[in-house]
Image (cartoon, rainbow, N blue to C red; front, top):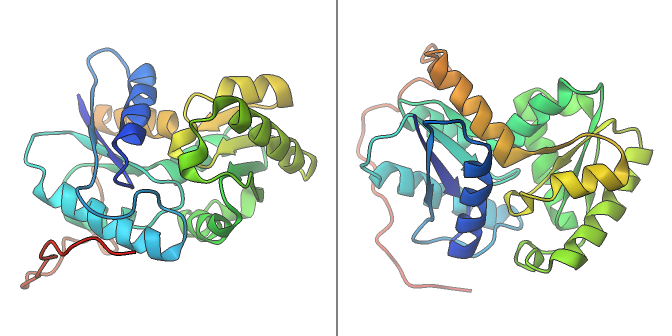
Length: 241
């Protein structure tokens, strides 16, 4: 089985970290390939970054010509999953909804621990669209930017503090709200005392299950194939602020 994992930003080091986490949980016989968009934001933090990231990821998947059986979209709360499902003929699993769905199997209410405060609205909207928003006890920000997560000690302290706050608000299960947090689930679970779900791991296992069961995206309506028409993609303009 071949799974492609798409980073939502252009930071190659983050792609490599995500792939390490995905390979750690992948079953025997599953290969994981990471894709980094050639253009877009270096980190997705806010509505503008998210929409730009979505277009870049779709462009990356559109032009990737190696065979694969499923796609994992590794951007928590980012846009693009519905477009990818229209575009591709393989299952597409988004880490946001994958983590939330698994969390709902472990407790009645879950909470999300994420990076910046500005990401909360996108995550809440994504969970509502996925049909699991009503089970969310809250989305709590650590105040750390995506590119700050390399500082392990600082990251752990911030996440444990935020995790305790959302646990005290009623969360029985926690979800790590950023692909760059892969690997933190065990230490956070030990310190906070509730199960912690990592979205990358959850998405990889769900992708394996869908492929193993022979299930594909429904074309009966919402995710019907895109209408045949001319579409002009980006011309490769220069970088801007």
